[in-house]
Amino acid sequence: MLLRRFGITSTIFALFFIGQEAVVNQLSFPAGGFSIFLILTLLWAALSTPEVAATVGFGAGILLDLSPSTSGPLGHWTLILVLMSYAISFLSYGDENKRGNPLSLILIVTLSQVIVLASYLVTGFLLGITATSFAQTLTTIIGSAVWTMVVTPLLLPAVAWLHDLAFDSRMRI
Amino acid sequence: MRNGGENRGRLLLVILIVSSLFLITLDLRGVNVLDGLRSGTQTALSPFQRAGSVVLTPVKNFVNDVTQLGRTRNQIEDLRKQNQKLREQLISRKNQDGEIKQLKSILDLAGTARFKIVSAKVISQGSSLAFTRTITIDAGSGNGIKKNMTVIAGNGLVGVVKEVFSNSAIVMLATDPAFKVGVRIAGTQQIGILAGLGSSTANLQLLDNQTTIKVGDILLARGSINAQPFVPGVPVGRVTSVSNAAGAVTQSATVEYFVDFGGLGVVSVVVKAPKADPRDALTPVKPVPTPIPTVTVFVTPTPSASPLGN
Image 1 (cartoon, rainbow over the protein chains, first blue to last red):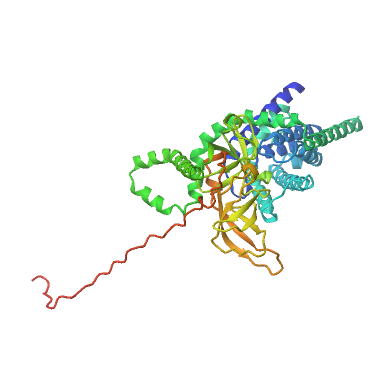
Image 2 (cartoon, each protein chain N blue to C red):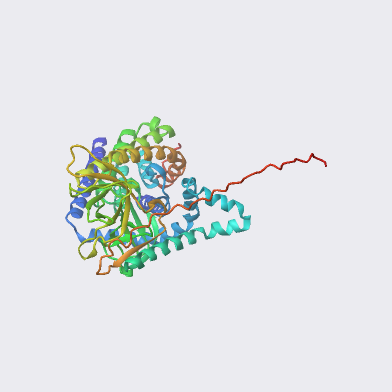
């Protein structure tokens, strides 16, 4: 059972990662664009138990750290996604009003995306990665939040279905 | 039982956090295995990026056309005059023609400076969510590309090679906030440091308080020791505004890059620079406006107008 869940989850994340790198990153979206991989990770965390969310955050973080376009050290995304995935799941798990409501999930993912990017920037600054200008940073973060709010409703049914497939949770959004 | 489950969850969280910190420490200490992992990922992703580039080219062209509608209005008007068949052919070949044009201008530039170059296609643009400005090109160490080599386009400086893999490389664009290049004002010996701002403009800081700069001045790369990371003489940009702050020790200015970073299709990596500095040979020629002939028509009324129907 555990092996099946791991296999399905890994395949889904690998496919989304390739999709992000080979398709989404090719297109220049205004104001920073979006990351379907980040949206998947945050949605998956919101639908899972805290332990699963943290583990998934770890795996997703490793993949993002291995992305050639990442400038930070290996483990940077991993640390942030472990903490954020656990936090999302810890705060929403057991509350079906949040987990079962698409609007709540979209808001949770959008807010989490903003926090994740801000955390990445702040920790990056502490680790010595040169940051862009404040205006540019603000544009990217706000732009990605708007994009996430637009893209998440499109991905939500598919991600919820895939999550059901992997965990057989019988949850209906 | 519940407490036991919660404790297990917290223990797992602690283990994962410690693992992440461990990875960060290893990376910051420069452990080679981790570099190999990223290199392996890029090698594995390259075929997908190439395929994505091919599939998405029409979409990118469409988006590019829409965003540059104002600039290409005349071109669009010309295209409208052509018949449907020719237009379809033109659209299908537009990408190839654009790349050839870019390549030709690069070859002109490299030929004038006698640079030995390796040309490559842009197969991916780095995610701007990582707060960096990079592109991935389809040539790597197998093509003679090494880290810290200068990357140029037909109009001038694009950036510098940041990472090299076997069949691809990552280029840090001149727009990246971490990018800095020593520049010289064309036709003079005035030098300064140009820094990327994350947009199509950059900030120039002059090094000498005795020198002055004016709007329209052209900046060329000053060049590095052994021509790495920067070969000398490559056009960088044009000064668009000058700041004369009262308290500033030296002048600073805003510079617009010559290269359109949004439309990069083909770039070239300078693998060998000539021993002689090309000096101002690569300075772009200012376009001379074509004079529009004025047509004056003199109308002289006939002395005796004949009535209509005569």
